[in-house]
Length: 126
Image (cartoon, rainbow, N blue to C red):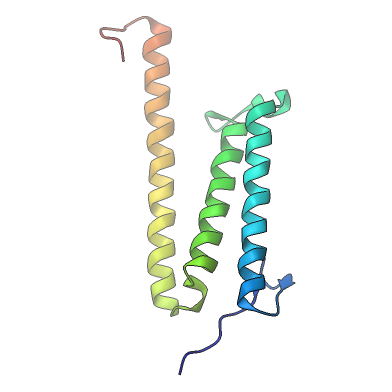
């Protein structure tokens, strides 16, 4: 016999009465996060142009909001919440390490390319 899915989001802060309501709730949450990303991308506030760990604060906000969206898509739409603890950890920890690695590569290679362009040692056009 199948078990019922949990009907709350945001760590139980918002509860729903049915799976349909929960799907709409998660969709609205993801839409709001996407709208925030779009508004920040259009207006690019000057206050968020400050550097933080090698990148603009605005870029960090985009990375964090994208991870939040990926989390909720996986957690609720792919029903990762209802899986066993071992499977959840295998998927989540693999993703966390991959994201950290990709951010490291982004920072490392971006700094290298910026250094090449600023020092004038360009041998070929990228």
